Image 1 (cartoon, rainbow, N blue to C red):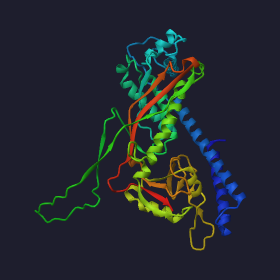
Image 2: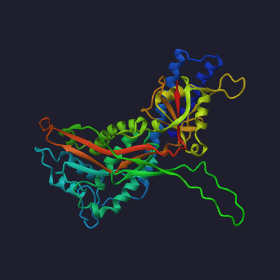
Image 3: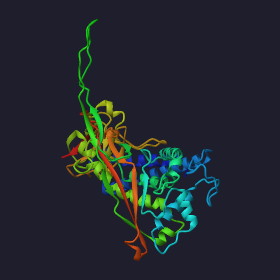
Length: 456
């Protein structure tokens, strides 16, 4: 099936789900019958599968389009050294070279294994010393989303930064951009997969981990004046505050990999390490970016959000969502969206909107995006799923709405892995441990860019 057919199927399924809700509303039933509920859930499960398939095909199309472009990777770590490598030509490093360099580092501490001269040479050209237990990398530029276009733009920016630093990186012994890009790309995608907040927040990358003050001011209540000719203007001072971001240290806890696993040439070591470490750090940081207390950990967006609508019944109503949207200042609404977990979204998909007096069927509050690049929406606003948020049935803040770019995540760009050689040597295993430093808080000078809906 092509993309257009998949989108048509998604629209057909959305209409079938709507018919179920319409039938129940026409019979004045507040609840679906068991068989209707099962069919409704099955339809939306199919919609989710189609959505993922559409995203995969769009991603593949973007990759194929990029391969057809004439521009290549600027990845030569030493423009003076033009000796051909075993994998590339004219000294150019290939992705295979980078993978082998990282594999050499991963196996470098296993006493019974001798890294070949070729592996050691490739590692050296990539800026990695296999004898070092620590591999330092730098977090790449901001990646706001995992769409194919964003990934391509991210890779282009990494290539550009690498090209600008080739001279400085050519003799490094702790690792650099030449090999780390593949691992960091996998790690960043993993962070986003578990990072509902990170995917929509503003991410700042700093070279050091010292306190980062961000000035704030609220001048919304101040107004100008009319003055007569030749009359001096009055002074009206602005009051400034500041948001200070720290850098809390996060550990992935160590993971174990067998020597055989690392030796296998079919294993993508960069993706393995990036995904394994990124998933763990992504889960804990997203928890903190969502509900963190702000004491010895980041302050979560739920904690920083202001009250929008409270005393909401389960399930919420159309009016509740309208009230929540309009509780946020119009200046923020143009860039606003909803945030909730998947269980709450399931509840929202069953909410019907009566369009006129006497309407007994109504339309769903949730609407599927059927065109390329068009997201599913609630009241015309897109949404992001964040599994760290509270589920329906609790008295917690379960739905957020607002401009999430005002939530600031601060990452310290140095990210490093440790290779633990001796600890599991008798088992033929190598342990890897990663560390990252981050903080987060809502940038709010009193104008409340994000508000919450709370259930009774």
